[in-house]
Image (cartoon, rainbow, N blue to C red):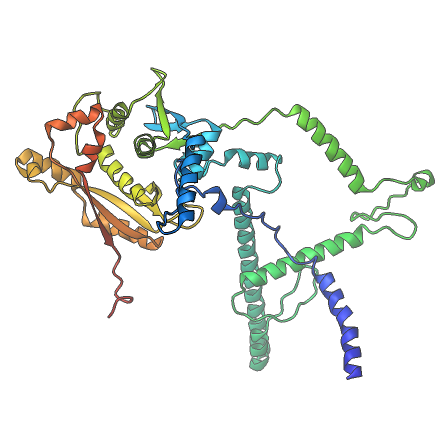
Length: 485
């Protein structure tokens, strides 16, 4: 037992030394910064200030006291409901928010809109600071570009190694045919020898395809070998001479050799610090050029449904009322925009899409645009930063009321509105199956026009929206191999 403990104690430093020597040679990627606490950032589902009441238990007097204290607190300091400002752009037929505080509030409380210079979250300013070196870390685009470049290089390295293995095998087979020794040819073919760049023959490698892991290891070994060769070539001689790769030797004078120079790290540190000071003085302040772009459905829901937004008109420089905003969005639901009129079409594209948006938002879903997947909306359980969208929604108007089939003209109009081909449905369903989303076909029953529809433009919008009915239908792609039973 004593001999075993001695051997273990002797082997432990060797293992530690080996690990210490091999640690710097590993191709370790830089550690990613910690992710933000999204649960705390997006703790409010909507941009509303609420005052929750404690539960009331009649047989518990403490609960009655807590309710009274809650009411007293509400009367003394009621919650402040903040209304944000935005403006309507007729060129893009969308609503824009430019205040940075309002942008963060609308994004963090409900995931409304998208950054005009970003894919989804308005993060252009942070990415631009990282790109200019004002903040630590790298942008997501640079990480993606680096990962793709590394993978491309590894694939090229793997192809090169496979080519060398094939060439060595062909040479071995040719040599075997010339000598007539079939057994030697088989042995050499099974274990080809790969020659490295410096002429030293490596260990025999199998002839199967090289993986990316093997290509990465070969690349690491080659880089280490080049570093060692460069260090050997640049090592000073005993006489204090430097032998560069060209074969020349540089001899310093005794006066120069007697002087002491500061380390390179110190010089670089001083230079960088001085450069940073000058850069901080010379570099102008970086302004945030990004704004939040809201769709018409999102803007109308924030104005009418929540009362958390005011949309201004550039010409009048005054906030638009809810009926005026509804009329404006209906005008810009088509291209080119329609002329302003008092008539409101119940089958207007904006009305159909907003009814579905309001329906799912009221049910607690986070509704985002689904244009990148060929659908109208995407439904998130909590938000895009927590998980992928679970459902993809396609909106189709439905004309079930007998009014829409009374005349031939109305029937033709309804057929043009809701016509969908089988090939369209097959393509959309196939795309959603590839991205692991369930397709939801949402039918919106368009009501019969009445004389009271014009009154909706004067303020009675709730009664108009209540006449619409929404029907959902879940469609899944049928795969015979998965659904045999």
